[in-house]
Amino acid sequence: MDSALFLDALANLFTVEVLLAITAGVVGGIVIGALPGLSGTMGIALLVPITFGMDPVAGISMLAAIYTSATYGGSISAILINTPGTPAGAATALDGYQLTRQGKGAKALAVSAIASMVGGVVSAFALLLLAPPLAQVSLAFSAPEYFLLAVFGLLIIGSLSAGSLLKGFAAGVLGLLLATVGIDILTGYPRFTFGTTALQSGIELVPALIGLFSLSQVLILAEGREGATEAMTKGLRGRARPTLAELKRMAGTVVRSSGIGVFVGILPGAGGDIGSWVGYNEAKRFSKGAEKEEFGRGSIKGVAAAESANNAVTGGAMIPLLTLGIPGSSATAVILGGLLIHGMQPGGALFTEQADTTYAIMLGFLLANILMGIIAIVGARYFVIATRVPMSVLVPIIVALCVVGTYAVNNSVADVWVMLVAGLVGYLMRKVGVPPAPIVLGLILGAIAEKGVRQSLVMAQGDVLGYYLSRPLSLVLLGLILMSLLAPVLAKRMRRSVPRNAEVEA
Image (cartoon, rainbow, N blue to C red; front, side, top):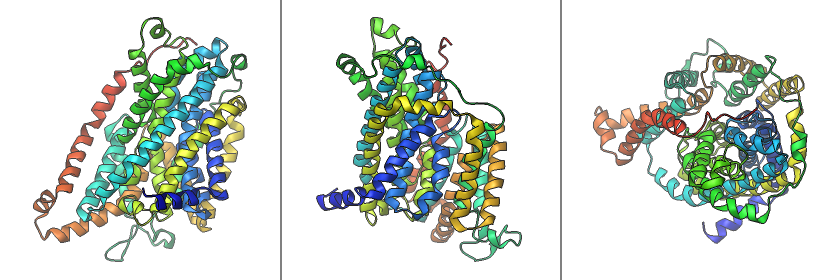
């Protein structure tokens, strides 16, 4: 990045609108993450409509801030009440809750905030350094590569977003089928619209996102399971900030776990939960003597390892998202929808034609992680209040936001019906263990895959196999597709290699 581009990016970043959006995203993300049962994915989906009237830098930066801050926010309820607000906070609960029982909950929260900030900052620098060269590769893509890239994305998110390969693929296929609704991209004939004018433009992405992720989760919460109503306030007494000796002792662990998190994040579908457990396991393995025995009983290093790793995953997951359009998690799948809504197609164009906007967003991600650390350290005690909010209060508020946000996109009642149907479908899918993320990927990548395959069939002039095998980039993508089929097996082995089932004294 040359100096002129860097100055342009800074000029786009340091505006009142962008700074307010990042701050709101950080605070909102921490609160959402701290609420048991809610997730960053849900918050991002709910706020996508709000970004419509915003500058792309402000809108996407806010979504990215929610993503990374919600990951940290999950540690608050994990530490205080042994209930991770997000899956990525499960490893933190092992030692964090034990520290709370020992009256060191405030210190555990501070360690979590510092480690999360460092992990996020490291991943932001990795994003700035690795994304541009990888994006250059995508400039050589043509119709065959775009088709294979879409297939690659669907295979990865379909196979790793849930425990069942079959369920993931089924959800991805459903998304592809829904992507065919509307006007045919080549012939101009309506398909599967059933005479409904509103469906001629296809299934709108934003109503589908809100329904599948936000409304469906609210329906799950409305079944009667209340969030925690009382925090372990006694654990918030005493010294809040770690001593200099404690910071030095956990520095190596934080750096190592941050590197692990970035690597895991780049692997599409792995997610923050795997990153946190791998980082925690490696921290325990590198520890010796009495320090190793503390793990699971109230180890500061255990909290630091898990939190730095899961927040480093966020920046790592943004790398394949911005360069290839491959989401590394369900949250980045929703952010992909936000990018497309703002006319930002992932790939080389982001780093050439829209370079000033793209670099401003990446610098905004870096700023969001720094701001998250500051706000978390100063306001951790106040975010505890979020763990006490009953679901009976949250559910109606979120449902109202779902309806208002959906209608505001196009001022269309038809979009609200799409959202409601998508919410019901998402709820039923969650009940049977089918992930909603592949459906969104099918909607997003379906049109790209269809256009790519139909154009490449024309370009191949009858020799489809020979045409694909004659293109080096196509061969690379075919290899990645084959590797993705083996990814579920590798993910299960990674999960089994860490002490996920370690018992925590209640």
